[in-house]
Length: 409
Image 1: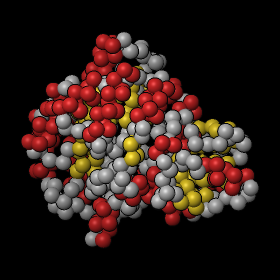
Image 2: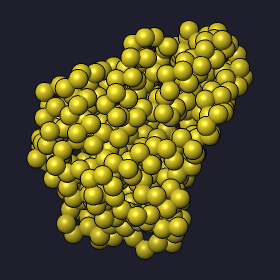
Image 3: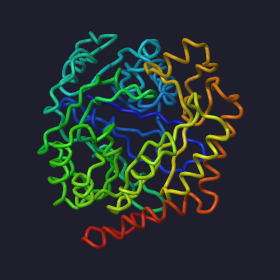
Image 4: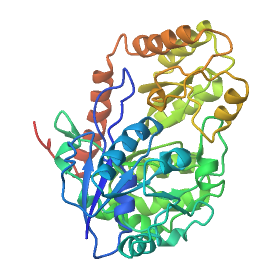
């Protein structure tokens, strides 16, 4: 049977350098499909959808809230032609009830060991409206290598330079950060994959540059150190969310090919100053993830925060606006207080203000969002800072013999 798997287009973060990374969710899901399923993948961010495509069944993988309305449009269009549609992915879980209005089936949870049932039901004409496995996670040992062969590889580069492939070494998160929905999506239990399964997948990826997309690697220091030790012989170059602030961990991470780290920065404390310096001491660059619009933020606070980021020589910065995604504590608080003024999910890009801030107007917060981007990249434009980051990784690759030339002009 022919299964068409679609990843909807979405509006990129305003002011961010424009490039497209290969999506992770669809390739993980594709790896779980029964052997007799012939899958074709369309990433609408780089390819157009042919709505007359001959197929038996359509799957729509939706990661972001900003994708959901486009995903529903796609689902409606195929269903109007009499083709059954299933929606899944993180954003489908966050918007499950709305998604049920646009799909023949809604899949909630992790896909390993589940797709055989779904496709058997489809073939038998008894497709269920909802497959809810959110409280029944599969054994982490069952998570195999993602099916990256479905990707159009030529489309994922920046000015001819090979960008990163996405991979995960664990699932779940023991933290409960204010703006995050992971508690709802996967519980607060950290579930690390066995080393051999992770190394098997990393070894299978032709691309030398990786983004380890785990919520945080700093959740079990012994496992984290063991993973980095296993990664050293692979000579991969990678970025990730935070790692443990420990000399042994940082040293192993550097040996294992740590290129840069996404570090959340919420204040201008000495703790943050020292944290960034320690990464730099081990040759690891830092891209700050800076959330604007928290209840203690004022115009002056944001200006001083941007000055601090420049002072500590942050390599890159990504500024976002606090966004109340469903099933987060942020949403619960702001919705209860009546401070959310837009429930148009297309506005939930993390670059648009959709709520009433506490200490400034929505218009002022939007203005400060643009100020932060423009001020941080005033002296060194974003493209130049990115070039320096890419040059750093290419220098490391040349040093260990893993460098590959530009993929295309």
